[in-house]
Length: 565
Image (tube, rainbow, N blue to C red):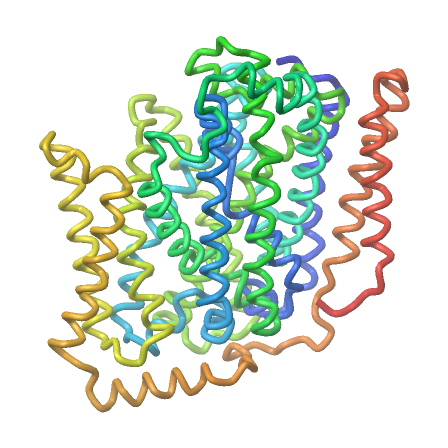
């Protein structure tokens, strides 16, 4: 796929803007709570859009689009399960996270369960998440090769380029930079998807044409692969992930009130429900437009749609959005992992008396280190083609480890009765059952069903819950532990949040509106100007309209009354 100079220019400027956002916020941050928690004053709509962008990556364009091409509406049904996961997370845990955490998702664990549990979760999660983010960077590089048509030779440069861009703006601007870049990325992605959707539907003859020219059952909600049992297990896994993932719950505790925290989850559910069909109906229409694609070609069905349907300028916008979707998830993980290392390792074990300036410096250095390690993992995977099936293995590993990690954490937020031993046994027993089931499924054909999520997840969830009950029964909380637990829940009763120790909360806060407006307006103006001078107006009318619309939207954000965030 040969890119027009307009598209290439847009992509380059887009990434320059991402770094500029990091530079802008690097001068606004004075303490660790602002760097990792937005000072607890992030607008709920900004946090919600960031949450949404953090929940998917290039795989949403690659894997789900492939599913939509092959299985039809079922792919939308599977993605829609995220709506229920977000609602469950918002209903039960959003306000609890806002009250329990300030700068790290694990800081409450020691008060609730003790130091052993806290450090165990730290060192169990960091390697898994580092490898997972390295895999995501590798996928970004692979996507670049497929979309641009530069071939496998562009994978390594794309890994290095994307990885450096991500950790530069994350290191510089902390959570504020991540949130604002996520919002700009969401606007770019939604605009590009809205333009592609009608073009694909018209090309396929509309919904009626798609129904007539696709296999029977193409518009069925479920099929033999994605059964109701599979969907139920998927909802459970998503709800646990949305309620315990470091980078996601960070969006709950970065807002100002409990009501705002719940609004974050509700906004995510709304976006998941509305945007999902818009994103994947074009891939379903591709089944009519390109009916004979091979399995390998279906992985690039979105790239094929871009090449053949989108006008000049919008191709660059959608490619930027596809890259941004992955970078959003990675940047959020960088910030969340660094927050845990800074607060739960450095401040807790190495330098408890570190001042605000020192903690911000350590936060930036740990973010840099995490980014460097993730790029290293991506390069290792690229250099060893035989190891690229690690992605499938990592998906299974997260199915094994996520419930045992999430359930004790969430139980500690809602129950006074769970003892320290109960939380620890829930973690250990759940992981043991999951690993045993995975081993049996790999070694013995008769146990192969254990490798499927609809069987693995109930087993690990059940084992974790039983471990919590058994450990609490064997060793209930003693008097000292009960006092700590009671103090923890008493603190949770009041909505007002305390400032993190050693931080000096700034009265004026940080406003994201000007930089959002400038970024969106700049992209729109650039698109508008480039189209006027490079393409006949009749051919570039769609891109010109989009550019003008983005300029208006950017102006609205920039000149909106400057309120404290």
